[in-house]
Each structure stands twice: as structure tokens, then as C-alpha cells.
Image (cartoon, rainbow, N blue to C red):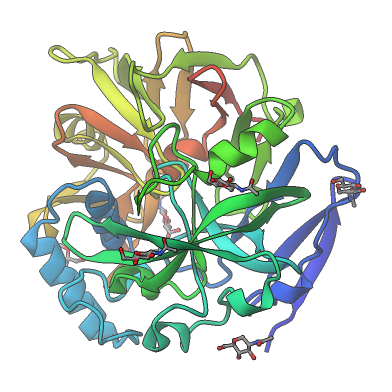
Length: 431
Ligand SMILES: *[C@@H]1O[C@H](CO)[C@@H](O)[C@H](O)[C@H]1NC(C)=O
Ligand SMILES: *[C@@H]1O[C@H](CO)[C@@H](O)[C@H](O)[C@H]1NC(C)=O
Ligand SMILES: *[C@@H]1O[C@H](CO)[C@@H](O)[C@H](O)[C@H]1NC(C)=O
Ligand SMILES: *[C@@H]1O[C@H](CO)[C@@H](O)[C@H](O)[C@H]1NC(C)=O
Ligand SMILES: *[C@@H]1O[C@H](CO)[C@@H](O)[C@H](O)[C@H]1NC(C)=O
Ligand SMILES: *[C@@H]1O[C@H](CO)[C@@H](O)[C@H](O)[C@H]1NC(C)=O
């Protein structure tokens, strides 16, 4: 089988890439040379055989954000899965949990995070749209754990302490859930060691999550959302902040490239151009939620602004697509030749893949920043059952004007999550 390859990039920083095999967790270096230990940098790995299933990611985004997944979408995902004979691990899980195909590879960006003493490395999805840090462990139900390559072996960590009488659970919009017990242990991000962090150990996890074989857990980085434990525990983000030079983190996701990076505690000015312009979070925000002021489709004369309620968006590294009010996505695709709103799969915008490049899409903020998303990024992926038809990275939903700015957006900008000042900064990227 393939091997794990290490490449030196940017001087002494170590970057790990995957070629045809799962990462050998034990072989990730436990420290990264040349870093100020009070700030850290994490390189993002892209799945080697990532074959995104656009409709399934749309379903996942709807579920995550509590919107109803259209019945037609559920049915067509099941049909696509059947037609292609994709293996479905963990069939014993909740039936009807949408995406048999999809969830398999629907988390594109994973980062190595260490747990326990001595450190055990797992590949986590760093998710600004949730607050909990949960992982697969030796507590995980055997039918789940046996099909996984990495679980955290709690009994082998000398620093793991069970938090008694404390449980966690997360329910998704479709009623499925994940739950488990809670430990306190050391969490290592690059070269920063967080002691006594709240580590949630999965006992059971919804089928849709199990089917992603690469993701060993989720690392929540929401702004002020409490964790889903009872009784409440501190978030790992709150334990991490005092260790950082500055109470902020940044992300630079890259389009179809393994060169994405998170930094914690500092801004990497080499990775953006122009000035960083900040927008304050909405009052009382628990997520990274802010207002945006307008949108523009390349080639059209005018900018559009909301006529009723202000437009709000949550910046979410853990959602793949951009979700916006239906009339916004309709407006965008009205300029894409032969685009079709496919209602038989629950309302998804598609178009022939051999179209010329899609128009760029722009979003403005009151800071004066304009995020320009290249048309190339707006073209998300081929349909799983028809490679000649493509699906847009922007899709509509109706959630009182709220939008989710997922990875399609984040790949186009450099983003600063400023916890200390309750704001999000954006800058154009150096491509
Ligand atoms: C990692 O951080 C520690 C301080 O916590 C420091 O002593 C050590 O030199 C760092 N390791 C590397 C390889 O930079
Ligand atoms: C820890 O538990 C796992 C699974 O139960 C077992 O395979 C392993 O040998 C144990 N390790 C130690 C050091 O006890
Ligand atoms: C856990 O809860 C049970 C029942 O409420 C109680 O008897 C027990 O003492 C608690 N354990 C700890 C460690 O708090
Ligand atoms: C670990 O964190 C818990 C929860 O905040 C706290 O009650 C406990 O005192 C901490 N323990 C240590 C050793 O800092
Ligand atoms: C809608 O999408 C599904 C899934 O790709 C496809 O099978 C179906 O033919 C599409 N409908 C139309 C009218 O093109
Ligand atoms: C969209 O992406 C697909 C998959 O990478 C590619 O085959 C297709 O040519 C692209 N189409 C456009 C219009 O960019």
C-alpha cells in the first residue's frame, strides 16, 4: 500500500501529506521545529482519494444547521448509493440517516491533533461551527471502533482522568445523535500543550459520521458556544487561549491543495495581501456570526442588498458549501448558462460541467472588505451519478436570511478569528 511521505516546507516546518493510504498516526512528529511555542501552526491535509458527493454535502450542511433535509434529497442519495454499490460501514446505525455515499469522504480538511501522554495523534476536523472536541476512543461502541484505524487508547494515557457523572450528546437536525463520556487530558496542537482539556469520548456516533473513515473526531472552535456536556465543562478553545501570544486563530484553506494552514496565536502576514478588515460579531453571538451587506455576480451591473432584515452569516470551516437565501443562489445561477434547479433531488443548482467558467461571486462587508470568490471555486463538483453534470458550491436554503459561509467561501479569503476582540477579519489571499 502507499506510504506516508514527509516533505519539508517553509524552512523547518514539517508538512505531512498523504498518498493513497491512511496516515500512520504514530509517525507524525510530535513537535514542529522553529516555532515560538506560544503560537502554532497546523498544516491541513486533504483526503487523498477525496471524491466529494455534492448533494450529500448539501444534506450534511442542512442537518448541521438544523434545517429540514428535503425528502427528495434523502431518497435520491439513497438511490445514488445503491446504484454505485458504495460500501456502507456501520449499517447497524440509524437507517434513513441520509448519506450512505456521501459521508464517506465529505470532510475535506483534517489536521493532526495529539491526545494524552505519551501523545497519540488523530486526524481531526477543525470546526468553527461547533464547540465540542470529541474523538473516537476505546470507549466507542465496538461495531464502530473495529472499523476505524485510529482511536484514542485511553488506558495508555497516563494523564487521562475520567470526569465522573458527566456525559455529552449532540443531536442533529434529522434526529440522529452522537454521545459519550468525558475525560480531562492533555491536548497537543502542533507544539502547544493544553493541560486538563475537556476531551469528549464517543460511545455512539451517527451513521453519517461513522462513514467518514478519515476523520477521527471534531475539534470545535465556535466563538462562545458552550459544549454539549452535562454538567457544562470548559471548551478546549477557552483552555487554549491563555497559552497563545494573541487570543486569535487564523485559517487559510486552499483550493484542491494540501497547503492550507491554521495558525493559533498569530497572524501569518505572508499568507494574505492587502489589509485585514474586521467585522464585529453580532451582539450575543455564540457562533462566528456577522452581517454582510451586499452581493454581486460578475458581469451584472448592480450590487444587491437585503431589502428586509439584515443579512447574517456564520463563518464555518466545518461546512463545505456556501448556503445563502434561496433568492441569492437563484440570482447567481440565473447567469450560468443552462443551469438547472433540480427539484427531484430536493432543490439543488446544477449545470453542464463543460460550461465555460462560472462567474465570480462577491460578498461585501461594512468593513469595506469585498470577498471575491473565483468562479472556479463556485463550481463545486460533478454529480455522483452523472459526471457531465456539475453542482454549484453555493446553494440556497431558507433560514430567515441567515447564510453559512463554508469552505467554498473560506478558500477564497484569509480569515482571522479574533476571539479576544469578538470579530472576524478578512483579507485577500496571495494565490
Ligand atoms: C516546543 O515547545 C517547547 C516549549 O514548550 C520548547 O522547549 C521546544 O523546544 C519546542 N520544540 C520545538 C521542536 O520547537
Ligand atoms: C488498552 O486497551 C486496548 C483495548 O481495550 C488494548 O488493546 C490495549 O492492549 C490496552 N493497553 C494497555 C497498555 O493496557
Ligand atoms: C455519580 O452519581 C451517582 C448517582 O447520582 C452517585 O451515587 C455517585 O456518587 C456519583 N459519583 C461521583 C464520582 O460523583
Ligand atoms: C481541570 O479543569 C476542571 C474544569 O474546569 C477544574 O475543575 C479542575 O480544577 C482543573 N484541574 C486542574 C488540575 O487544573
Ligand atoms: C436531477 O439530478 C439527479 C441526480 O443527479 C439526476 O438523476 C436527474 O436526472 C436530474 N434531473 C434532471 C431533470 O436532470
Ligand atoms: C467543474 O469541476 C468539475 C470537477 O472538477 C470539472 O470536471 C468541470 O470541468 C468544471 N467545470 C467548470 C465549468 O468549471
